[in-house]
Length: 222
Image (cartoon, rainbow, N blue to C red; front, side, top):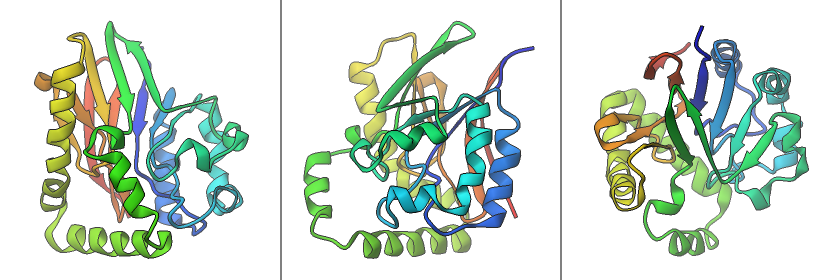
């Protein structure tokens, strides 16, 4: 039997607990032999790392360790905002991660560093209340998803996905498949060696599952 590798991203967990999302994640993690978080597991813009660790989400940690969780940092959960307690839920932490399965190499990064002028964007964010910024973003995303559905929501992030693909075309090795996230816009373009895992929030989940085939799954949860 082929190993089930589950790659997810952009959960944006905080100190606040969501039972529906928790139950969905538990059932999802149970499908995996190997779990990889490709950035933005939690959100510094809404809480500190300690608050996240002490929240109800800590009930996920034993299951994450059981699945040999690899944790790739994103822009909402950068390395400098975490500490050694990432070992409570992951066996490895990094800014990028590559692995081979079924003769195919998968190159993982969150994607914020090749989505435009990252240094400039980071400087701009310093002048904005982190909580106000994320609250506003949360309301906008939830409204768009609920009112117009996932296809319309996905189109918004597709602009940045194009930047990812330009970067990949310039720097990628032919045998690699680049797996990105960050945009909350799931995409499966094997011909371009590009997959975006999307996000999990607002009753919607998207993720990459690798076993004897490569599948990008999009589904609703309640």
